[in-house]
Image (cartoon, rainbow, N blue to C red; front, side, top):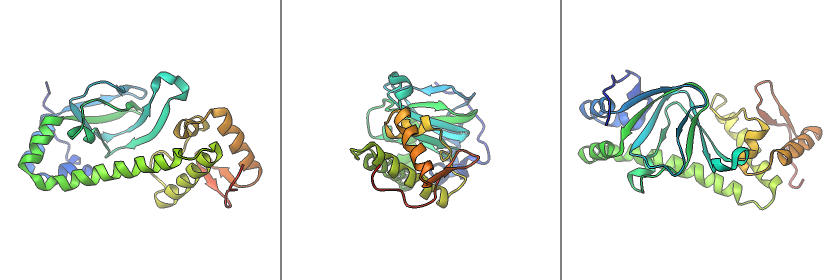
Length: 227
């Protein structure tokens, strides 16, 4: 079911959850996992498929999407940077993927069996605190999206999202997912690309925003409350 892999020396420090375990348990989890390297644009898991593993991304970037059957109108949750974990909710819920993961660049990750991680947590309950922190971060991310999508107005969704991008860029300029195309912005907020293009063009024309050489949008002055 799994193939033995050597534990990279950086791995425990990259993942606080793994670093919480004693060396013996941590090595057992990593060595019993499945290590994979994929090229860019590789579909790693599909929405609705059964899963028996939790993914620990050690390098690269993964795109998290839903409703892939809608093609270009698929919903883009965001991007997972190295050090991210996908699937922890399956420790408690049914073991079915609720999203699709696709590599945005060449990526390297480790799959650890859900049952193996549960057994490790039973053996060393103190690690549940690190697990809870990971889950709390995910809940906060989803609540921000619920707040964004609750706006009835398409412009209010865009306005809220641009403000979120600005705050995150100021807090951590090098984080993944700040340089987005207009198509990606549309996918993040559930609007058509045409609508997003039109609103962004008007905001640029009005001197409210600019886009730098990396493709990142910056707010130059308070955005109007209405479009």
